[in-house]
Image 1 (cartoon, helix red, strand yellow):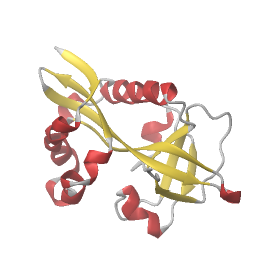
Image 2: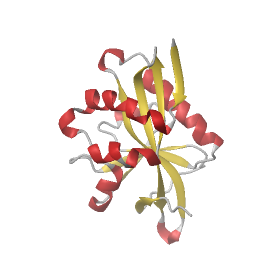
Image 3: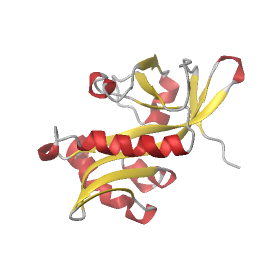
Image 4: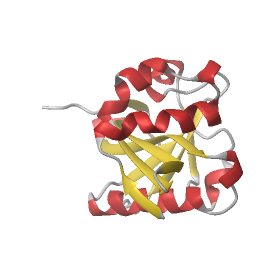
Length: 169
């Protein structure tokens, strides 16, 4: 049986296996999994209880010139089991997350792509460079230095000047 859903926080640890398989144990971010993951949402495609594809959503605040800002989801830890790739599962998970973003009236979403071509067909067509201070906030690997955005509810794209944590009350 296959399901597409958001995990409850008590289930987040179940995504560790897929993260280690896809990103390697040497690049695995233990700090993210021990603490930061619980501030996020995780969408998954499961088959018989095993996660075969996932995307993590972290709330971030994008700042624009003139002091404007918007709260968005930054998509990270996008992964599909190697033997399940090229079957459309990542597209399903991403589309599922876009539905939630539409419901929440998010202006846009973004990710840090290893290869931007992978995500162009999903609408990630607006690119900008991030600065070195943002690398840790974005969990970006060395050598990656730009983001790609997809408009959700926004009518046009404005290039952010900075990425920050969403302020909570």
